[in-house]
Length: 222
Image (cartoon, rainbow, N blue to C red; front, side, top):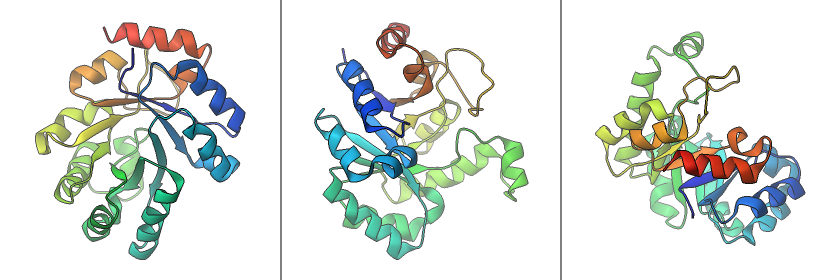
């Protein structure tokens, strides 16, 4: 049974990513690749994952000048990418331009990384706390008609209050409290109960036995 889960292929090896997806392909919705994987494996690494006929999300959190972002968006078509993350700090004008000009790609807005806390934002000079900063940026995502946003489980309800049609892609999923770099976390069940549309799972799925891990995750969602 497939669930609305993107597996995060945070590997430097094409073989590792292909092996992982091969084990769990019948239980996930899509594949998320990012800087580590694409920098290490290039276009060939993306092509290797296309054989599974699953949506691929390129999680690059693109943030640059308008002209560069537009060029990035157009280049995604050639790669067979279905979803791509883009930072909402690009601003309304840039975001609106790629939504209007690149209809084939579903752009997902990134607000505040789930590894950030209020203290982290303050140290970077932001006046808003996490909640208010996410709220401000999500309103931009809603205004320019992005497909969805990446947000921690703790912000899902707030996103849906701003725009119920914005899909929530949720990292920061953990089964128990941890001491890693994720600070705003919930269990898979808790996140879905909050209204998350898609879970993005990395370490809880890839560490240890992926087949057993995906069974545990699916069972927890029942």
